Length: 535
Image (cartoon, rainbow, N blue to C red; front, side):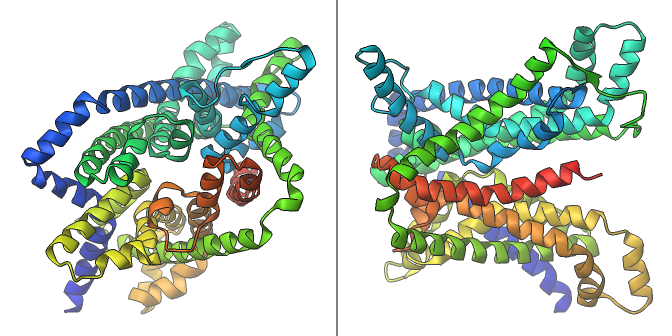
């Protein structure tokens, strides 16, 4: 019985964490004449707009994050200029800013009734709109570009730091000028890293709901929520969610392919930091250009949004709802702590199972769980609610709908589906640093099974476990799409309240929870920057 218990638990866990995707696939078995009519109506009305808007948004964001991320990574890796050490970690600061908070900040300051346009009209006696509309597709591209470029920056910087200095020095000794060294050495070397970073940024773009909804952009994610909540059509929502999932699967395949090429390119040659391969020293106008290349993304992605949110916060300090804020914070911390504890426990069990018995079943379950982070929140919501509807239609007296939609069960389940992969990746990195010889020695001394995990692995995994729990905690605090639909009654979180207040044009009140989310997001960014600077 014990021999079959572990595989049964693994299969049960895989089913639990892949239910959204499985239920979306099963929804196509309901494809009858009514479903065909729904799909036909969508194809004639909203589907072309969803597809075109999503395509334009993704292409524009891909170009933006690739240019900004590659430019900043090249600047801090290949060149030496004043402030370079500061910019190495400061360029990660936009990771602490949720994209929807950046959107609220720019809208409040740059809209028609914002302080900038009002000040310009009063100062110069002008009238009408003076700046382009912020709530538009170009505005969303701006927000996503400067919020998500750190994905490309981080991977491209790692790729360039491995071998770029040596190869650039070799090209210089062969007589290649600086422009040619960058064009023919640095850029091809970083191309897989840039592709992987762009894929990650696009997955975040497709999963976004806050920016698209607030700006009124008709993307697939916004369409899923509109079909389910506004049109009350679960089949339309399922079909849109399936299309969105197909796009994410394509991006995930591209990211994995780029990561394989990236590992192949960067594991060769380990002489980084040799004396004859140092970054090129810049002076004068070139140094000023390098500083600007690094300053502008930090300003647009972090500094200006924070300042824009501080202005209404300070102006309405006396009217801030402190009592409600404490309640929102308590709900957010409670849900985030519960989700972090459960996801970390599941990830520990999976990582140990993969270490102890790396069979085909265990590897398959780990791979399935690792895909969870790529599944957008909108897809998870539809994938969880579809089975609830089926059960309620077959068994009207059942209380499944209550437990999933009116208690913490549904939202925690969604968090497990989405964020177990985050904890698992951190713990797998920790296990990779534990030599297998320690396991063999412990077994020779009579310690096996859970004793091995408790006495040998756990003392060496404490840091990785703490990092995994922290990352999940911060991600849950910022999660909006799934929380918006599945949160329990009377338990609004900081992310949900920020979205609701901003949607009601109460940006002064939204500034307090928004800046709190930024402060929480700074914690993993600080830890990441310290890790990058460590020898």
